[in-house]
Length: 378
Ligand code: SF4
Image (cartoon, rainbow, N blue to C red; front, top):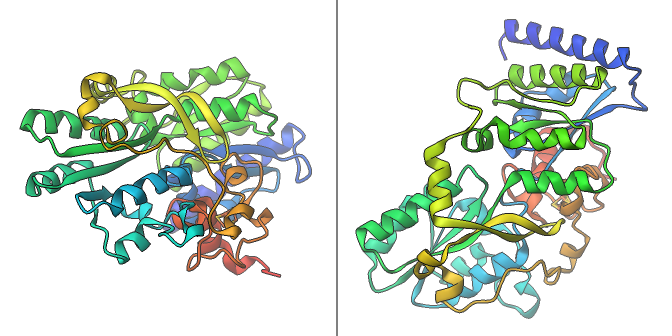
């Protein structure tokens, strides 16, 4: 951060402190704002925003890391498919180390282990890479692991449409796409201590600001913002002002890319290829209309319907340490990673137990990487 930026950040932090104090908040009764997006979590830690904020304002992370909310049963499905010699798995690299539940009986616990044992697993950088893998391997079945939020679902939809147009018939999607607003509603439907939301800029580019207006039905507030540290601080200041004024509203601090109605092309591609379904979330169970499955018209590309595997579940089996993992509570802002007994001890960046430590956008990974020096691992 340059000196000018640091000065501006300091002034914003002072105004946040003054505003929080003016509504009677202190370290014992802090305002709690949730940053929903994993990229925000990493930016907040990397730029030291937490240290700048007064004790009267607390940030908690939400369910915005796509890998973290993926249940172990999904990884089991993928590992099972990877065992088949006719299958090539195409996946983003983050997914490879996520533990499944299959390790208890000696079978591979995750995709990285399956790959080490000979499974054909290709790391892709875009969903469309899977199409090239399929075209180059007409005698094999290529399964793309379709994980992510509204940010990646449109490109997965584009992948299916491109495969159809190109006549590629050996490409399948194993879907676990999830939608952010239903997860936020699930958090608000339960007992919580959240005073406002830093809303995910990337998701809002697709959905539009309006998609988050449901917050007003809960008497809540939110600010859509980008990923510059000053923009995030400005959003926190605005949330603090809104809390002081008991204002329930959803504002857009990222107007250069976020529109009211979102991106109509991306939304139309998602609607054409996917339908909303109930989806299993790590730590939150099954949430109605929170996931995306392929429509019947695209059943030929559906790995579950065409390659005979079971549905994803949150099993809680496998590595005994996994049963102590509290990712579910971390993802809903109920606890911080420090409340997990494994944090910094049995669970580290080198030996992650749960997905919140595996993913680069995971809350536990961010706490460990950027805050480890401050913690006492006793
Ligand atoms: S520190 Fe590790 S075991 Fe604990 S909640 Fe985070 S990922 Fe799970």
